[in-house]
Length: 453
Image (cartoon, rainbow, N blue to C red):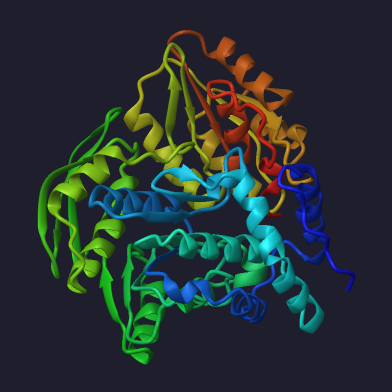
């Protein structure tokens, strides 16, 4: 294999082209050998980290954000790794809310090139996500973070992040996703997700599906791991929910009880995500890690997770939500009418081709009065807007097609009127594009096209 020449410190385009070429080696490959070999040649940075590992189908990002916010409020230096990104690649890797600098990405990739070349020559070339995960682990180790809160990419058992020996792993809910890769039953998907459970480790889960829980119990028993379940070991009760967020009480059977906790994150399901986060925090306290109640309150109150039931403006309301699968659209359709008051709901929708469009549209159309079908710009991923408009018309909902997502939002605002609500949903990519109407991004170099297929 021809050696890769190191990139100049300001050669953003060169790095961009090189990373894009990694897609020739595949966007997603579930395997660990490449990561293990790559990290070994990089000095095994993952072995220098204390990790909280978060998997599941939905709610992973919110849970990672809450855990990170609480640990930061407790005075720790916290690395946070999530995917996909809304606007810029550097969103994925941050420390105490500060994204990794683009120049640092280039410098680190240059440092990783010999290891990448060696692994490519001796085994297989790393994929885009393997490169990203390795870069993240090295960055966090070099920066000597106190904790790394890491979101699983896909599945768990063979995910590139599953090289870590986590202090605690969290598995949120389980539903059908990536069935061609993870399996076509809840039990098979749960088994893949359960692969992040470590020998002698700890699992916190918010799943209420007995099929998944049965798999988790079996895996925990085989690995001598402890398992804590929201609704049983972590009991929570909403006391107030609305446009300002959620207030709730929580009791952790193996930890503390809390009254009147508050988070600004909208949607009652965020209380469940908070249960996962606080459940994980309490397992860290079992290990002697100091996290005062004040940090839990402050972390919950300050947490931010953009693009999830995010209000961009009022009159009309414009709400962005990255609901990208059937479970998410079901939840979104149930939550929006409970939170907001409006005369008319105008849906701006774009959905990726690998999703269950018919079921997602069924959920969203149940609350929509009008549909503006559009197309997100992540290359080759979006379903044709005409297909979405056809589904709307078949359900008796008037629709129009506006190919550009930002123009689609502008048109929807006109249709909604002052007392209406514009809901942008169906993909995190269309949400990221719409969000730039309120948060213009200047000179970002590694955008949404850097998200995996």
